[in-house]
Amino acid sequence: MLDCGLDISQIAHFLPLLTIPGSLLTRVSQWSGVGGDKRTKLSEKMVNEFRECMGRVFIDGTPEFSVPEFGVVDVSQIDAVLISNFNTMLALPYLTQYTNFHGKIYATEPTIQIGRMYMEEMVKYIERNPKLKVASAWKEEEFANIVPPPLRSAVEPRGWRKFYTQHDIDACLSKIQAVGFNEKLDVFGALQVQSVSSGCCIGSSNWIIQSAFEKICYVSGTSTLTTHPKPMEQAPLKNSDVLILTCLTQTPLALPDPMIGEFCVNAAVTVKHGGSVLVPCYPSGVTYDLFECLSGHLDQCGLSNTPMYFVSPVSDGSLAYSNIYAEWLSTGKQSKVYLPECPFPHAEVILVSGSHYNHHQILCMFSTELGSDFQMPCILFTGHPSLRMGDAVHFIEAWGKNAANTVIFTEPDFPYLEALGPFQPLMMRVCYCPVDTSLSFAQANKLIRDLRPLHLVVSETYTTPPPQAPLRSDLTIDWEPSPLTYKKYEVVNLPVKRQWETVLIDPLLAAELEPVEVKPGAAICMLTATLVSRDNKYTLKPLSMEAQSETGLVRRADGTALKKTYLFGSPNIQNFVDMLTQQGISSIKVEETETGSIIHLPNDDTLIQVDGRSTHIICDDESIRVRLRDTLLKCLKQL
Image (tube, rainbow, N blue to C red; front, side, top):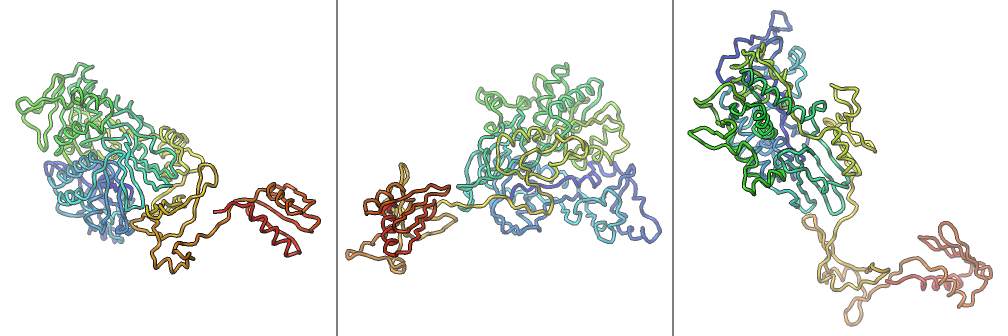
């Protein structure tokens, strides 16, 4: 199984989990679809599950998430799960704790620990401000036609599940085996898997799945840009039989560098005019780059003393892990560790009187609440980017009525207008600067040309331009021959067939072999042995005495096996003609053809046809045919 991601985009259909209960209820109202006719009487069952704000309907209940459809396959037959990065492992607890999965899970150490922080942050957000009721009536089939849009087009709402618990996280992560880059792991003797750096985030991996003769590469969440993680390794991915490419950029029209520049400019302008900046973000990933870039930009603008806050239940752990995983960082940041210096600017913060200061700016890190030294205007990084949970909900409420403030969206996972839906009308300035360092289509096409796979497998959506730019044919995967495509519920047979297998020879059996050299550097021999298969590995071992008697081997008087002679190769025509001449056969005519030779013996009324695979003797006299056959066999090599 390749990755186990969680679709958290469905949380946009729910009302936010409020930090201060009741604060948002002044702007939301009961769903106006309730009435007195027959059609709307059915909806009275779900009237308490819907709330309306500015014409948009939201679910008022415990947030639910779209989990992978494990029922499509028999998960008990899954032997291994390969995790690419911390974004693609959020559904693992549903797999390990609520199904009959018993296989192995492989991920790098940073992926495991940062993935833990992602999971724990969401658990704490949900459990800190819980909603007791679960909205389920609207999912019934009888209401399918009256459910308001966009809920009507929600993806498989019956499969949505409540978020898991801290106990599920601990139990799940205890089953993951940590691996290092370029470490080769044996999967039940059938395959080897190897993780190589994908360059997207700390510990992110591409996976190589190979046997002795076949090779499949899985490229997911990859970046060729120079950021804080260890750069992508391309060499191990080259010349594969199949390349599976996924998780390309979600913002094909927005390049990362200009977006980071725009982010820094908007933040600095807001602070200059006395406003505060809210940045809904994840506790890791591109957030580290935003810290570094914004810190330098504020210095250039003369705003070095602007407070920057990072508020999250896991903020301390997030910033700590980013500094201790030096071997997983880029070469430039690794070199700082050995000087020694801190690889990230935020690590230079010194604890003074309960707050964190350095000579440039204040960077405060609190788990659940801000201290009394909270200053404004400031720049605040906090979660969650969906604006449905976390401290971002409180600050969007508190700062949203002031036009001097700005909220800047940098995560591309959620449409920012949908995220702001429950908070409308909003006075504060809104900026959308999505920073997605994943492969663009141009980078992906170049990477494919460099890797030179025999076959390419991509999502069907990558073969057509994105909806926001339907005429941009350059925003597609361009590869010849045409790549294999897949879509939901479609089974794709990969064009890889195992034609060869490695077989080991037992040392005792190898000692008895007597190879015969058939050409310089190549020797062969015949053997009779027992093929033993164990743990998907094959070994040739000597025959037992019982097996020898069953095979009917002919033995000499001393008990040694009588070796049989085998003929091989093609006859040398000139040697064959010379031997026939020595036997008194004359008037030999040789004719070369496209497939071989034809030898005509007119005195004996005989024709001999020799091609690359067979020899035919056409003769009416049996004695001559036998003599020719014996002469021909002398021209072949013996084994």
